[in-house]
Amino acid sequence: MEIPPRRHSRLTMYIYNSTKRLNRPAMLAAALFFVGCFNVEKVDVTQTSRPRLLIDDFEDGDLWPSTSLFKAWDCYSFIPEQPPPTCDLTAGFDSTFAYSLKFELQSPPVASPDGVGAGASLVPLAGTVDLSTYATIRFSVKMDPASPGPPPGIIVAVNFGCNSAGHPPGSVRGGFMVEYPFNPAADWQSFAIALADFQQPSWQTVRMFDKSECAKLVDVLNFNVKSPLGVGQSVAGILTFDDVWLE
Ligand SMILES: [Ca+2]
Image (cartoon, rainbow, N blue to C red; front, side):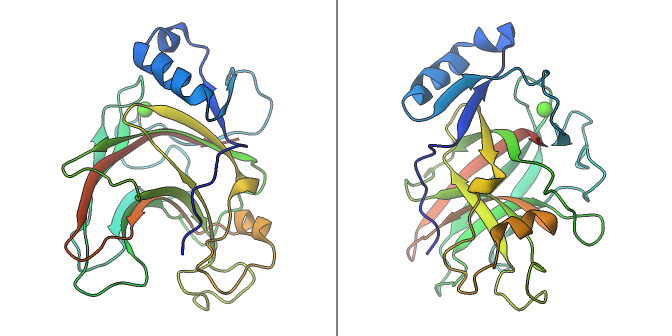
């Protein structure tokens, strides 16, 4: 069982102070919709003294992240026998480029313990990276449904893998990880998620002794979609994200 999506009580949707953005009817509509669901605050992202790491805004037009900590973006299917998703640069959030994960998930003939899913990931250039000096991950994201469209049960999450935290690498199925499920909409939204709110998935029966250790030994960053599809079911969509950074 995956961690069910929680009410995002500690998640803050931030709205840029840019006049251009506030004038956009779609952004206003999204902001008004989320007033009832999230703590909404205006944050001037240019006025912060906290350490920041731009992971990628995709504006350089290639698949290499802005930070030199990671290799190029890659995408994958949970089940190798299924066709991989299509990943490419697409129109950005008030910018030229973002990164899109176009997925078409089909139920396998035999149920897989890993479920059906696809994702986009970053892997360190070498070994692991220590991201424990950062408190928050920020990104903008949207989900364009495709026929037959994502069902209500689809789970979208961001996660950090830390396979070597506390145990020898490979000794825990899937490797230790912490994740945070969220619900993207058809229009762009910007999320700020405290790393302290990430949780180890409940299906990992070996528990991490201290989940805060994960940020010190990150071996992958994933944005993924997954669904408990029944036999014969399928789901498709395009998950697009932009402006991924740590603070
Ligand atoms: Ca961009």
